[in-house]
Structure formats: C-alpha cells, structure tokens
Amino acid sequence: MEISQMFFGKIGYIYSYSSTILILSLMLIISLRLFMSRRKKAYFSLTISLIIIISQYILLIILTLNNSTNLESTEYLAQFLQVLAFILINMGIYQLYNSSNSRVYTYFLIFIALGITIAVVRYVLVINQTNPSVQFLLFQNIWIEIYLLALTFLGFYIISPHVGQRMKYQAALTIYFFSLLSRIINHYMLDEPKPSLLLIENFAPIMFYIILFIIIFDRVVELLQAIYDSSIKDGLTGLYNRHYFFNRVAECINQGDRVSILFCDIDNFKKLNDTKGHQMGDRVLKKVAAILTEESENIGITGRYGGEELVVLLTDTSLRVEQVAERIRGRVEAEASVTVSIGYSKNRKSISPQELIEQADMAMYQSKKTGKNKVTAYPAH
Image (cartoon, rainbow, N blue to C red; front, side, top):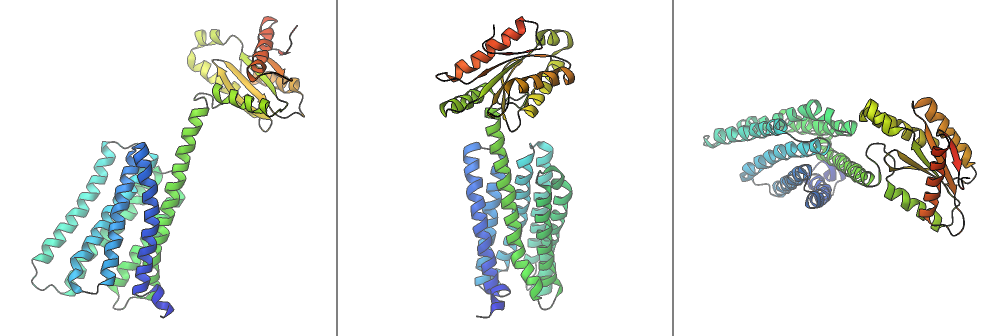
C-alpha cells in the first residue's frame, strides 16, 4: 500500500473519519454522563449534536466504502447533518458559559430553519430533474457548503465574545473554516483534487474536535471546581467557611502540628451596619478579609467563623504569632476605616480543635473588654 493512500486516498478518508468518531465518542460519554447527573441544557445540546455528528461520519464511511453513484442522496443527508450538528454543538459551547433565553433560542432556530430550507429547495430542484448532470448536482450541493462556511464566520462574531476560552474556540473555528474551504476548492473548483488540500480536508476536522474536546473538558473542570469552592468558601468574602476551617484545624492538631489560631472581630460592626447600611458593612467586611488573606498567604489559611468574626490558622512555626496579629491589626486600622480586636492561642498538648479555637475567641473578647483595637494572647489576665 502506498503511503499516499494513507493520507489522500480512500484509506485516508476512512482513517480520518474513524479517528474523528473516536474523539466524538469520548466527548459523547462525558457529555451524556454530565447531562444524566446535572440535567443542564448545555449538556443536552452537546449530547444531541455529538450523536448527530457521529451519525454523519458513519454515513461518510458508508459512502467512502461504497462507490455506487446511487448514494448521492445519502451524501447530501450527511452534509445536512453536518450543518445541524455544527449549529447544535456551537449552541452547547455557548450554553456552557451563558444562560439561554428566548432570544438566543430564536437565533439558533433561525439558523436551523435556514439549513432545512436550503436542503428542501435543493431536494425539490433535483427531484424535478429526470437525469440531472454532474454539474447541476455540484451546483446544488455547494450551497449547503457555503452556508456552513457562513455559519463559521457567524461563530466568530456571535459566540466567540461570549465564551471563556476565546482563543481556543477561535482556533477551532479557523481550522474548521480551512477544512471547509479546502473541500469546496477540491470538489467544486478543481478538475483533480490537490493532495495538500485533501490532507487539510481529511485531518483538520480531527484537530477541530480535539480542540472542542479540550474546551469542554476544561470548562467542566472549571464548573466542578466552582461547585467545590462554593461548598467550602463563604460567598461574600471568599474566605473558607466555618465547617471547612474547623476541619483543617482538626487535621493539623491530629497530625501533631504546632499551629496557632487568630480570632478577629470587627469593632462596632453592628453600629456601622445601622448607621451606614449593610452595603457599607459588606464592603468593610470584604476589605478586612482581603487584608487577612494577604497577610496569611503561604503561612496559613483564613476563614469566616460567623458574622464579623474572622479567623486565621497559622501553620508556619517560624513566625511570631503576635507579630502577625499586630501587623493585621495595624493594616486594618490604616486601610479599612475600622478597627479589629484580635485574640490568639497556640496549640498545646492534649488540646482539642474546639478548645484551641475557643481559647483564641476568649482572648479576642479580652481585647474587646480592655479597649478594643488591640491584640491579646491566651491566657488573658
């Protein structure tokens, strides 16, 4: 077998179509499982489009293996399925990043209706011809190819600005565009297909679907990470929530780590909310949380324990806890237009996670009682 046949002949087509089906099947498994578990519209659109695309490539394999000229209608069906699947898969990509409304559905339905119209008109024109010539059939077939080319352009201008992985998506559309262009030139403009264009036509779709697979996979990872973060983090401040923070403290103590707890409370926070409103209170809370996060970076983690109470778990034993606490207190006073009372406690033998946190809390209340805007160690006398 000549090497050129592996890339340009019938074997090249079969290899290209089979490789594409394999990639599409992996995408279908992921999309179907996500749809079954989460029932999102994006996964439904992707699942349907992938089923259609796989059906299209199966038809293409049948056409390639069967040289009969009586399969011309099957070839056109494969072209129409390609248009329908392209619209649906791009709709799925859009829905991965955006909520769908009636306007969005109207646009996609219009695109599908135009594709159906082109297919029906072509069918009527061909069926009314007794013995249509090859040139006539090519002229009718090219319109759906041109429509698909136009849809690729629309993808750049309509969908691309609204997806998170814009560069990848644009790269995929560019590859798809050159694949379509190569096919149009080879099949409709040249007497003999050029091997270089056949190579692009055969293998560019593989790259197109590989990039789409990466886009879908990365987006799913992003969504799963977001779901996980929402389960362990406070929605307002971005700090870890009380449950997660306590579990991390317990984990460190069970491992015998020498850790410390800072317990911070914003002074006069209720008065701030009552006089300046909850929006101002939220802004102050987020600012204080940001200061705690910056000061504890690489040396511990921060959490929101409840209301205006913020906590820090320090895991770096080389630091002096009182210095970290004092630095936080000073920055809050200088940058957040409020003050904080801070208490801290250090891990000792035979102490439970709850006791360690309660000791820091007691030290913080001692700061409150003795004037606020200060740092107190446990035990506080």
